[in-house]
Amino acid sequence: MVDTIQLADTGRRTTRLGFGGSSLMGSMDRRQSLRTLEWAFDAGIRHFDVAPMYGYGEAEACLGEFLSRHPGEVTVATKFGIPPAKHPGMIGTARRLVTPLVKAIPGLKKRAQRVAKSVAGPREPRDLSPQKAAASLEKSLRDLRVERIDLFLLHDATAEEVHSAALLEFLQTAKTAGKIGAFGIGTDRAHVEAIQNESPGYAQVIQCEWSVFDPTRSDAAFRIHHRSLGDNFRCLQQWLSVSPLRMKEWSTEVNQDLSDGGILSELMMRAALQMNPSGLLLFSSKNQKHISENAAFAAPSPRDKAARKLYEKVQQATDSIHAECDA
Image (cartoon, rainbow, N blue to C red; front, top):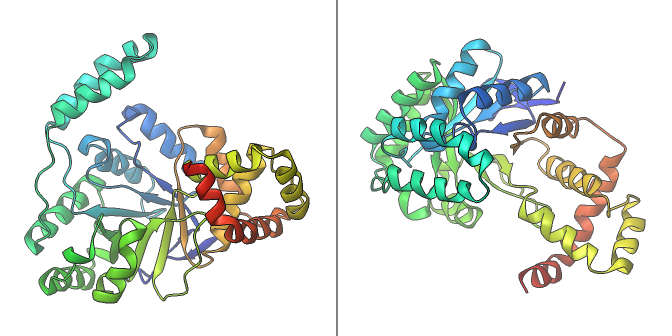
């Protein structure tokens, strides 16, 4: 079982590792999405993250079906502020028709994605009024089939957007009423500090990207990190690989074979967990084996010491690593 933590001030505990639902009902159909969620549950994951815009507006309802199978067993985070695409039903029908062709014809996937975006149309203008937030909350409660959402996050918030006392009052009222457990922001890391300084009431929970290239934070917010691998993994792997001498030196100091991509990714994940000991780390995968492996990274291991050493070395070399990756 994955280690657990207190989930902000919701009064609930959940696993330190959570599953991100951005690919639900998007790159996967409903059957595949539900199967993937069950894989994560079977691996010990008990926190699931979603948003109204995910899966062309269908991800929350898909997660809701999964939650109905596991009442009270998991925690859930969703967001508000970015509405779903228009015509989700049309997109879903088109996806079901096109999926077999995409698998059979190389190059068709990107064309299908362009068509889907065309059908979806432009997103509605941003509306962060209390009325719009209330409507979004009620729809999420219905789609997720729950009476309370554990975390309700303002999606892609900027400092300029979170000065509303009325919106903050609505969120506090919804929390008191038991419709949400806690609220906060899910945004780009570049906006976090300004929001904390200018509107700290909104920043009790902070969800943003974090990897071994980033410094640790010591504020009082409950932090949820994501994107610990992806481009960050590819950048570090490339930087190490171009110099056999560097790879050998780093592997010796860390006491692990960093030329092994599986070991490098594990150490990066373990470092992300260690540097946010009271918070949560999100990951996403459509592969059952990868899901099980990632879940295992949340358990104590002799490699935790190597992960911390890798983090220290990356922090010392961050500027030069990024300079070479960006060249």
